[in-house]
Image 1 (cartoon, rainbow, N blue to C red):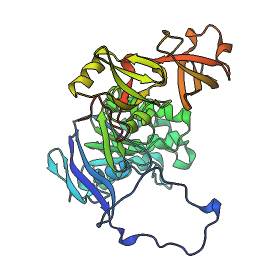
Image 2: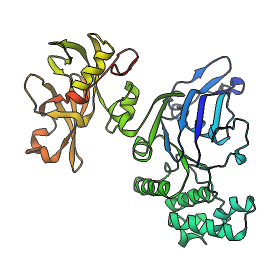
Image 3: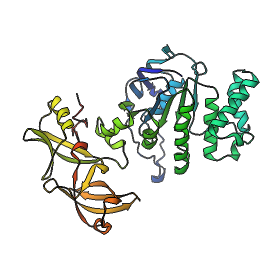
Image 4: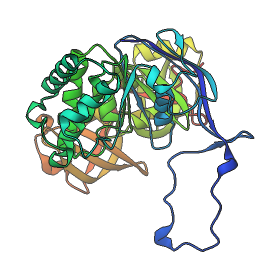
Length: 401
């Protein structure tokens, strides 16, 4: 059990060790793929994490999420002590630990690749960190048996890792971390090597686990489904900077910018070019010839910031778009692909020259053939779930300062 506080944390990698360019011309198939992120380069070097601030409560489950290279794993490794902090302060239980060795921070870490000792049995892997601390044999046996019971790996205690499946190995890796009864448990993309079915199972296991052990969790993932289902709060990162911190519901319902809006939610939020106008003293959005008056809470948020009429980017999630609504508020599109998902149909439209996805519950459909490829459909956006963003900086105008 512990609180963790990160204050103005910055990580800069010196560029003195930049790789030399090869004179040999690469073949097309050997060329590196384009990165999903932008590197910030200063006179000191490459900025991997910039001005990271976060207070984590005791027993809280925090998820760091973002695309590859956004700095989330680097942040986790700084908490662990595996990376030096360039600037800023890291506190665990109000104690400054910037210069405290990893072994003295009372933390455990679960890695993506399990990191088990292949020549040891499961029991020996679990015992190893406790033997290093020279605990009595009785206490070691008790902790190992309790962890094995919690994680459902009792029957595997005498096996070696090579005889286990990926999900079983990850359970052992988690078990080895929790037997130490750490104040903070760090998890770096622990499910990314598992197939989809195992990931779902392990997500459920981790949710159960956090209610059975008195530990603060910090979890890193690039999978927004993991972030939404596991985290008490989510920290969304991009290019080494925090974009938004909030509960899963907060970041889903109130994204602060277009990046968060597009990253959280599956399928991603639809974006349309349009205008924010005032109609009879009320804010409305105009897309082509359609005008939609916004809900009362959005009226208050925009009025409080004295937002004027202007061009905007209009966002609406696929589940917040309705087919065949009131005439006069209609947008039109042509169905390109219709995906039957069981409880719903995902319609991929070409609307106003842009791709648009609508989720339609199958219970609302009387005739599926009306949504076949090439069909013309009309739709409108839910007034209480429309987001208006600044087209230049991407900020949500309801919350922008």
